[in-house]
Image (cartoon, rainbow, N blue to C red; front, side):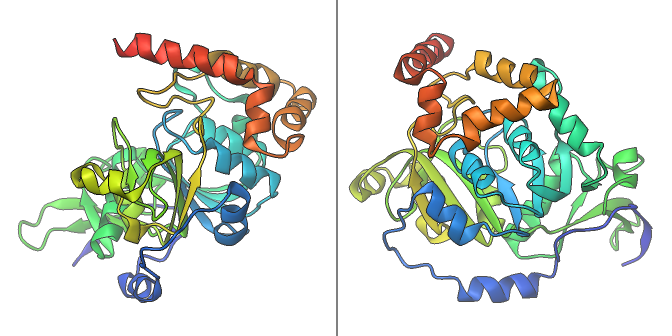
Length: 327
């Protein structure tokens, strides 16, 4: 196959499907109790230097509790999949947790504005960046899930995004037309937040899936955080509702309100006041350091963080707001 052009930036993860297959051949797939705590999954599955992916979309259905634990564990030199990242990206930048980034949507918190601290970190020169589109990153995950070394897209051709990516322009062997080949991406570990799961890892989420199906099938290790744990009979009673099956999953963490301050579709709305407080604190690095000490480094667990953000009273308000929005 003829290569006609290529992007300027490096590919951070090896796209060789046979190397990935060798890993997956050894991966346990037994239907066993996989319940752990946030601290346990970070200690066991998220070491310094690994490549991390996060599920959800923007500030919706994000695994905030585990990300907080990554910061408290002072993880460094991670690779990160910046697919549709807002508050999760903001958090990881606050801890300077990653130094390699596959970027599609980052820094911006949508209508809330741009994260001052994330911008400072990205402009610091401490992070190597390879640029992609949201779709091309999803295509990379899909290629990995299918067990092939690359996927074909057309939308990046002729753009600066292609120029700053690690993609290649190839000539179609059937038609002679040009396409962009994007390398398969197998993250070392991903964390996906869902509405419910059983102790074996069968997970159910509602609402838009984004690329979470591909993410779960591409990743070498999958951590599920769930709003609630249900018994296996509940899963078996409606098997077609299962979004992610147990044999893909390595650990399950029960974390009620685990997407806070983000939105959890049909359960609770995002805490816009708290997200605005983040943006305000970030403007001054000294004030931001105090902010982080108060809300993340100065607490022992996610439940204590929720208490400092207003506790059950605030959470009930967000539940009511989500119900109103749903109607």
